[in-house]
Length: 137
Image (tube, rainbow, N blue to C red; front, side, top):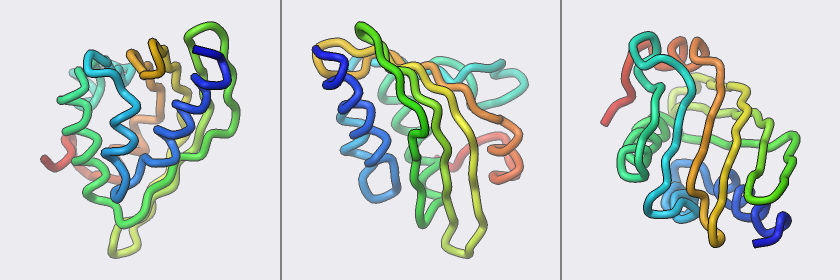
């Protein structure tokens, strides 16, 4: 796949990463994809590596709290089968509670699908927003 095509796949995931379109976003992941939220699970319950099924469950749980959510890539750099993205997010619950975070993500692609994600974010923003150590199921 070309570098531009790989970037387009990542953009599609990010553009559809919201409560209404999460399935279209998840369609960009290969069946054997692994999504790693970098950190220590003993200190941040969401951290660790998850297969596509478990990742989808966690992401749907997070987005279920949101009336609106968007990811906005600020910088995207690609080489070979990898796309690196610096991004920000903005979300809001139905009662108006705001969420925002900053991210650095490294996507690895194969045959037009994302096979690996390494996500770095500010875990304290997540914990402050959720007020809990786990997302709702």
